[in-house]
Length: 115
Image 1 (cartoon, helix red, strand yellow):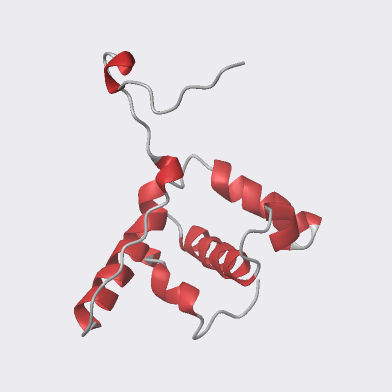
Image 2 (image 1 turned 135 degrees about the vertical axis):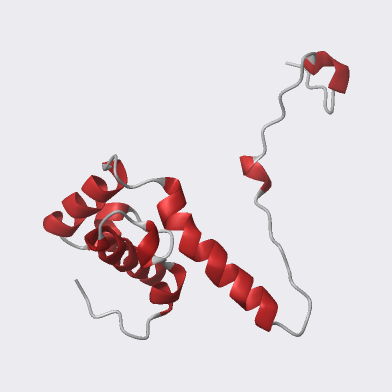
């Protein structure tokens, strides 16, 4: 793993939230790699088979949960918010929204297409 001293990824991980410090180190390294190759696939980001396997093992490990990863991110976000002096922009990717209704037909048609 690369030396992450001073890298922004260290601020985003709460080492204490993981059951094992090795998980925190792996998560920090993955975050660094993903940040350097934004939008890349795991094999592309990891660059070799050993790192790719390690990434997949990390994500599938039952001892690593979503909360372990997000705890540090939420704390770092709160610190950035507290330190800010200006407006905070919150961006939302609407492709993640799911609209589930008891009666989906109550919404009506937004567009009609003839075949």
